[in-house]
Every structure is written in structure tokens, then in C-alpha cells.
Length: 128
Image (tube, rainbow, N blue to C red; front, top):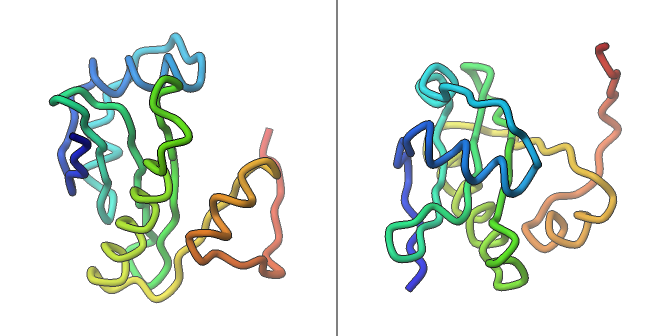
């Protein structure tokens, strides 16, 4: 049975394995500094194995940001991302955020619209 956990602080090995599978990232990272400054994060676990993750970063004030929404390819199309993003939305609200932002690729429009996100006139620049 799938279980969503709030602030699970998965090990670097767990997150690196998931991100490697989802994003093709071969670079190992220590996520402790990132997660310790996050407003919160959600982990999806199947039989105690991390199969999904979303981070809620924030500005220390009223703005929060959905980052790193990831679901293992073998677990996709089961509503896991939707459940995690909705849980992250509730968590952000409970912890004082008034705005929740997300940037995403066009093929994910349906997911984020289903979670209640709407387009805004926000600007975006790519920093190289």
C-alpha cells in the first residue's frame, strides 16, 4: 500500500536513486542542506521504498515553491504525483504560505491544473 509521509528526510542514497531513475542524474548529492531549509517535503513510499518525492521550498515568508516532483517510472499513472502535490499544497497552507508557485514543462499542464494551479503573468529568465 502506498503511504505519503510528511518530512521523511529520505537518505541521500534513496533520493539519489530515485532522481537517477527519474531524471537520469548520475551526480550524487547530499540533500540535507536543501531539505533542512525547505518548508516541507512529501515522500511516497511503497513497502518502505521511496517511489515519489516533492519538495516545498520557500522564501521564508509567504511564497512557497513546488520543486522536484518525481515519481518512479514503474509507479506512474497511478495518481501518486497528484496526491503528493495536493498534500504539499495543504502542508504549505498549514505552515503559513499564502502563495504556492510551480514551474513545469508543458506536458505536465494537466497534472498541475488538476491540483488547482492556474497560469499567472509571472516572468521567467533562464540563468546560464
